[in-house]
Length: 360
Image 1 (cartoon, rainbow, N blue to C red):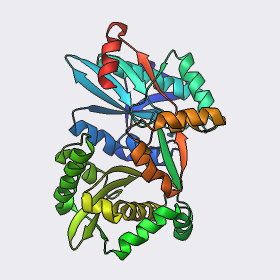
Image 2: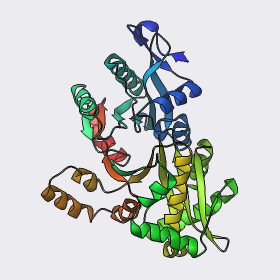
Image 3: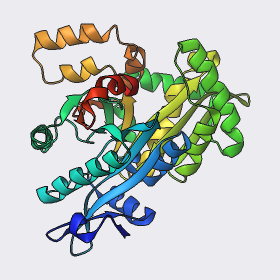
């Protein structure tokens, strides 16, 4: 574990800024209540393979415990950079530790000539600490911004028996899963040799639905870096792949990140069956929830509003490109959550507007 800068600069009272090794950092992320897949070292490796820099920064207490920390990603272009911590930082009950961490992140970003540093706390608006964290960041003169990761999602509780999880699905989803099984859809766990088939399905899905996908190398790296907490699931009919999911898990949640299906997969309900297998896998790992990832943010805003507000926002959501996937995701018995916004500390004001548009 490396102490950063000179001791006089790095220490505040009994706290020190450090760059933890991989094992210490990932153990901290796993144990932290805000810990996320996107703060693991493997996420930094994945983004490094895609052209980002990645640094781990943490606050060390006198007794050797890590109190707060963040995986900071930086993207350089034309001698400048943007800095970003996805689903982070991981904050402490010790406010001095949080203050020191924010100062350290700012210093690292300045050294990279970053135009701004963006934080995206892994805290939903309904959590008890949300208002306190939001107020603290505003007092640090950080400006709320749109998130890069999905701000609204559906979280399915899976810390219960398999039968209870399944019973909470909608009647239609239960019927689709049973129909897929009855019609001969077989699900198997894929390995490295199946990544080409997965990518072919992703290409087909992207072309049909009109969205961009990552490269084959990116998906291969994602699957490899997160083993054994990544799983490739393929749905097959007569030995031919018709749908595929690549899902992940951290210490708290399963994560539904990448999936696709061809026409045969859509007709047979293969995606519903794959999701059910993915949820069971995450539950077997001890996860307490399953994150279905992005949905229209208007639906997240509608939670807690009055009838008129909900109706207006639900109408707005109908024009969102994610409304189709929301219809799929809502049937798995979860609840809609909305995260805090992103927060930017502007370091080079003259260039902020341009850089903000590029990263957005």
